[in-house]
Image 1 (tube, rainbow, N blue to C red):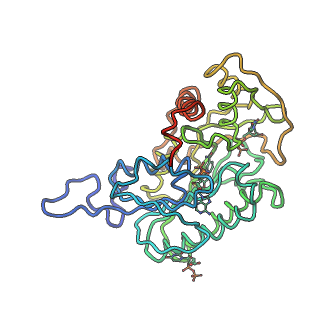
Image 2: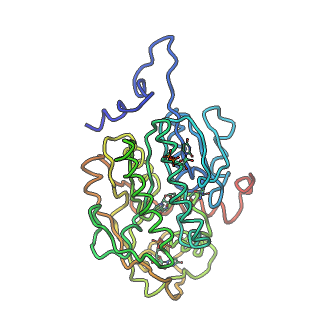
Image 3: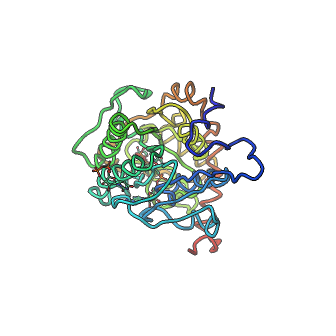
Length: 343
Ligand code: NAD
Ligand code: UDP
Ligand code: UDP
C-alpha cells in the first residue's frame, strides 16, 4: 500500500517514525534543480516543512531568489547558483530535476540553450545520481504529446510532435530527457521517476512569462484587455500548483517509475478561461483577439487513471478555487508591497 513507500529510501529509516533516544535522526539530503522557479519553490517549501535538508541548484534564468527568501539562513537549506549544463559534485539521496524554462516565451528565447539544458543538463544530473546512488525524478511535460491525435492523453500515447518547429527545443528536449532517464534506469540500474506535467498555475508564476493564465490575470488586474490567441477554442487543463507538488512527492516516494501524467482533467477553452478570470477579477474585463502562435496544440487533457491507481493521487483544487489564490499574489506583486521585490 502507499503507506509503506517511505521505507524504500536510503537513509530514511526513521522518517515518519520515532527516533530512538541518543541517536541522531539521519536526515535526507534532497537536491531540487530549478528550485528558485515557480513549481520548484513550492516543492522546496513542502520538503523543508518535512524536515529534510534541501539543496537548490538554479541559474536564475527564470527563477528568483525572492521565491526562496524565507529559507535563507535556515541551516537545512542551501542555495547554489549553478547552470546544470555544467557538471557538479554533490552528495545526496534524491534529485528532483526541474531546471528548464517552462513558458513558451522563455524557452523560445534561446532555443539552443533550452535543448542543452534538457539534454546536457539532464545527463549531468543523471550522472550525479548514478555516482551517489540517488533516486532521480524528471519533470517532463504534456508537450511530449505534441498536438495530440488522442484525447484525453494516456501515458501509452507516443505523441504527435513536430521535430523541426519553434516548440521543438522544448518538446523534443523533454522527450530526449525522458529517453536518457530510461536509459540510465535500464543501463545503470538507477532508480528513476518520470512525471509528465500538464499546465500548472498558482502564486509565484512569473508575471510576464506570456503563459495564458498569468497573461489573463495580469491583464485583468491592470484593466487591459485579455489577449486571446486564435479563435480561443483551443483547450488546456489547468492544475493548481499544490496539487502538482503533492503528486511529485508521491511519485518520488512511491515504487513506480512512470511516466505519470500529473494534471487536472478539468478542460477549458481559452474563452472559457477568460470567463473564469472575468468572474474572479473583473466582470467588465475585455477580450481582444490576436493571431495564434505556430504549432499551438489544439487540445490537451490528461488521463490520470494511472496516477490515481498507482500513486493514490488526484487533484483537489478546481480552477475556480485556485485562481483567487493566484490573484491575491499577483495583486500584491503588481500593485506594491515593495518588501517582496527586494533580494
Ligand atoms: P520556471 O521557469 O518557473 O522554473 C524553472 C527553473 O529552472 C527556474 O528557476 C530557472 O531559473 C531554472 N533553470 C532554467 N534553466 C536552468 C539551467 N540551465 N540551470 C539551472 N537552472 C535553470 O518553470 P516552472 O513552471 O516552475 O517549471 C518547472 C519544471 O516543470 C520545468 O522542468 C518545466 O518544464 C516543468 N513543467 C512545468 C509546467 C507548468 O505548467 N508550469 C508544465 C509542464 C512541465
Ligand atoms: N556528472 C556530474 N556530477 C557527478 C557525476 C557525473 O555532473 O557527480 C556528469 C559528468 O560530468 C558527465 C555526466 O554527468 O558529463 C554523465 O556522467 P556518467 O558518469 O554517467 O557518464 P560519463 O562521465 O562516463 O560520460
Ligand atoms: N494563449 C492565449 N493568450 C495569451 C497566451 C496564451 O490565448 O495571452 C493561448 C495559447 O495560444 C495556447 C494556450 O493559451 O493555446 C496556452 O498557452 P500557454 O503559453 O499558457 O501554454 P502551452 O501552450 O505551453 O500549453
